[in-house]
Image 1 (cartoon, rainbow, N blue to C red):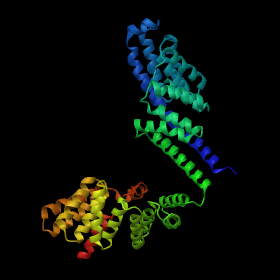
Image 2 (image 1 turned 90 degrees about the vertical axis):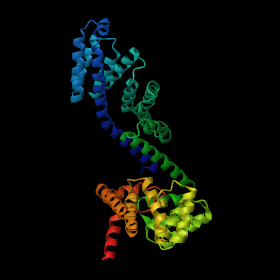
Image 3 (image 1 turned 30 degrees about the horizontal axis):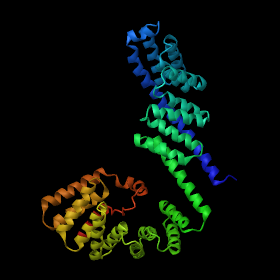
Image 4 (image 1 turned 135 degrees about the horizontal axis):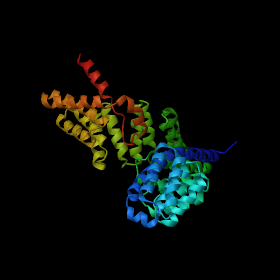
Length: 431
């Protein structure tokens, strides 16, 4: 039976190779773009006629045919067209570059490698050539050579996100997830919206994390950190009861370890056990009096469970310690409302909205503002707040995105009350 480490390595190789097919489509698009750009270069008749006996029109036609064939996915036809270009213009580096791309897409990897190397001999600083040489070497499992090619590409073109991405992929293929992180981080910095970069970067961090956890487990499978990481994995999978059991074991083993009681309290809150959640937030503050997030969460919990006086004090303290805890403004406003301090509550609801006018918290804040203004007989502001609430409710696909949003919920965020349910309950109470 294979070990977990070998299974992970095998899975990594399989997943990485699956990306080749996707990247091939992008290569085709890139080659057509390059060809289109070179068509403009071919129009410079004097320069071309000085390099080759062919007429500019002949080469231009071949370049256009090659670009059209690449766009259509007819790679053999593109090879034929670009071969005409290199035959007529043997010193034209970009011609060999396009020919190499066409040959690569046609599956003629040896010929493609030769063409790209010829392009580099003619023009050593030609952007893209080392990138595709590296991709060819990667496809043929020559990872060390691929890495060398890709390193050269990053020096020629330090802004090539794909070159850094492929360099990271080569490290992954050689079971060097740690070495993959630096180039993949660079690729991400250059192009943070590329799905392939995001995938490979996330995979590298995942493998490094798994390796750390495996080493930790090997050192002591019954250590507090092992129970903590198991609890965190259960929590992320919404297996809350199992998470509680593991966090409790960890907390008993290391009662003064910062962070444990807060994580345990979070799980109790999710399970609806407010008293146990509150006890553990208090225990976290005993261990670490400067635990701002525990202060904020305990304050919010107390506000929601009819102890607004203490909750408001904790929330004010948390905001003084860390003004970035913007959600605390919402709960502080709720507490102030319970204490009949409406003017201050309105101000805090407005701060909650200003922190992010597009999120769910702002939607709830608008609804609560409409109630406060209505109770103060401020019809204009009450209507404006309600209109904003209705506008956001129409735009926000809350029920479709809630599960996905919960997966990436920040550590400082608390569950948001559904404004529509709140409105329905208020309506029922009024009747």
